[in-house]
Image (tube, one colour):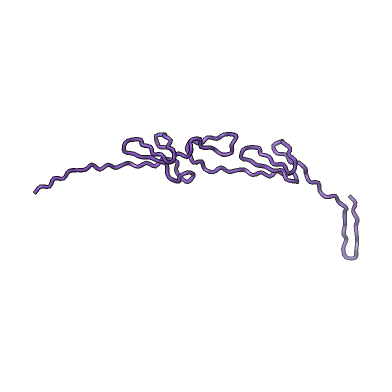
Length: 141
């Protein structure tokens, strides 16, 4: 580096002829080197980019609630999947498909809540059917 000192009556100024800083052409992430401008995905939920300068930038996906009680996690996918579609569970363990009605006994009807997925219970809602027996009334005159 070559510097020049300029001295005037009021101020002393040093000017230097410097080279611009080097910008890294690669990034290293988990021991793997990537080229500047390269995108990569270290895991199904992680998306990364190697910008000029050598510092990796990553975004991690967030999974929404699954609309089922029997979700499975495939390691090749980011978020859990519902292999049997939207469903809920009765207290006896029976899985009820969204829209279906389950009868645990002759007087009870159970179904999934209309919009419970991710916002409350995943348990089935059950109602007991009330049957009124007609009675004969005798009129005595």
